[in-house]
Image (tube, rainbow, N blue to C red):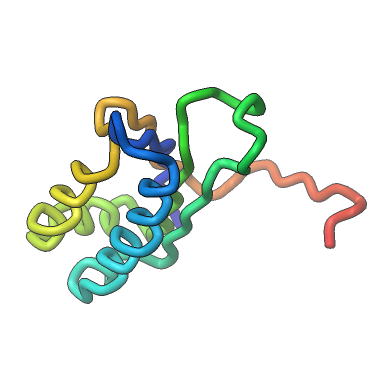
Length: 119
């Protein structure tokens, strides 16, 4: 299993509310609604910055997207799908500051520490 972690910034001039709405109601369903694209993904997560705590963490980022894939080859197949370039890539320009994105592909964790209060 590999994961794409991507720190997101909203497009200049876009409100946080509009960013969150577009990400949740348009972009997410776009990814999951395209079967040729969705077949490559194991899981897709959207993590929004905790409201009221902008001072905690690096400023300027509005959320983190996490996409799970079975392999790097599946990730490459995902971004290589014609549906990605036709639908997803143009949609990203509608709400993301593409130049401000920070991303990487990670492997399964090698260290996991569960605290005593884990529920």
